Length: 326
Image (cartoon, rainbow, N blue to C red; front, side):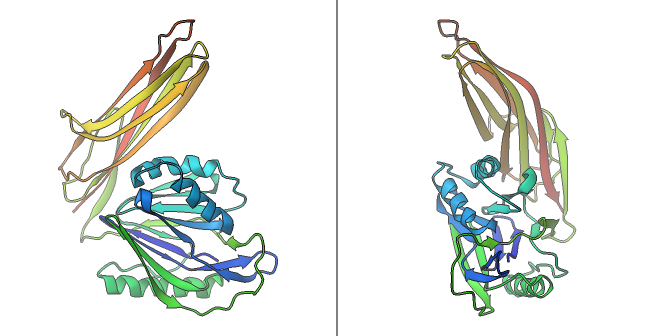
């Protein structure tokens, strides 16, 4: 019983969700409760579908994780989800002001950038971002269609908005559904199918594309919209004793400049070999045309006594830039 619809804008994100949770034994509406969790420390919202109790558990894990930004949450959410005992189909969507990530069963991941439009249930209605009134009206029509065609949308149509460091919620429609009187241990915010991820162009003739590179990558954007820079650094740690330690330090900078866009670090310790990929996700609001980026990575290893030496070897660097232009 989950309708979650998301539209990511420039510097803001709109999220629409129903509030129905159902009893899998009786196939009836069991109770009404929100499926969106504010994450103030990360300036983010979390929308959940799947076993109802896992949504609040995931929100608690994020709040207690020490993560301090939406960009850090985007990098960390897949690993946090993997650590939870999740059964069946699910989707976790974390969004901030103009960016986000969705994670589904089977490690299916989507990075959400301006123009991304997500629907959890199929429908022909599309959100209309022409102005706030048309956006809210089209969101209600979309959820009404999803309710009629799926039979699993109940409760309220809640409109969550996040922009800057402020999040708000407004009830756009209330179906006044009556749930069962008895709560059961395990209810579902049901996930029926995979998320549908499309794009909406906010400006006339806007075009979105992607450029791939290695330790250097150049955007084809004209400077009208921000660039989304992704970097993947694969490395191998080798420690020769229990006292060995090392780290991998990475930076995304402007080509030919010391200006830092994003940084990442991974620490290692102990003996043996470990190979990992450090992922860095960043949004560049500098709005430079044909902006070139440099990804640098340095491995540091200990040279302590007792044979506890370590090395960190960079195996490969891959990168990409998602850009938009008029």
